[in-house]
Length: 241
Image 1 (cartoon, helix red, strand yellow):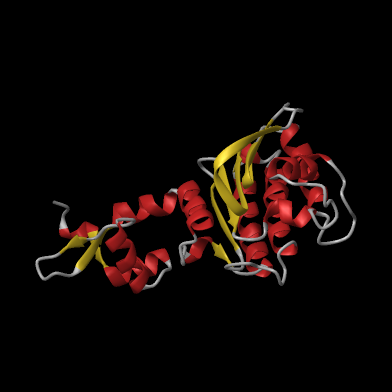
Image 2 (cartoon, rainbow, N blue to C red):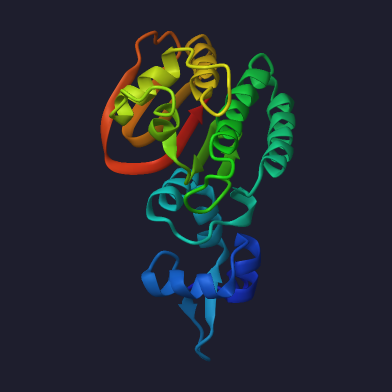
């Protein structure tokens, strides 16, 4: 049994996570984030459990993008590009402060910025579900995660490349061809820049849209695109460094 000082109320847990108390009750009922019942029947939460949940960035982002859960911790949710840019600047400062990353900190920020802004630019006024993006990072672990519940790369590129009929083909075009200089069809231009930066620096990228997953690594000239059993309507990106 956990000592009392390590347990917090449902109100405190909701405040730390940045979600509503009703959401925590639903998560408890579904088993997503279980509480500990006090003798009086009140829901209590372990601080360690809350911290572990917040640190599991990949699972949080994938779950939100794939399952369409109604809320994510507010610290990871960017409802518009202004909020994203502000948090991106905060991350960039943290990257610069790490001496071992000093030589590539600006490039890491540029890659994350390009992917995040793409989500806003190419879904502006056409978000099929919840607007905005998931944006989380752990500088010490060398991980950045972004996700959206937008239209996805295939839908975006079909506006100018109607022959595209699979997410795999769409990702290949997006990361290897200059498509158009006009928004919103210019998605491929930004992702081509992402590919060039990642392939020339000690970084890695996993990018999924639809049922296709692309993997990029340093010195990896070939595009590795595989089928995913999960069909993600929007986009998910994992940047490692």
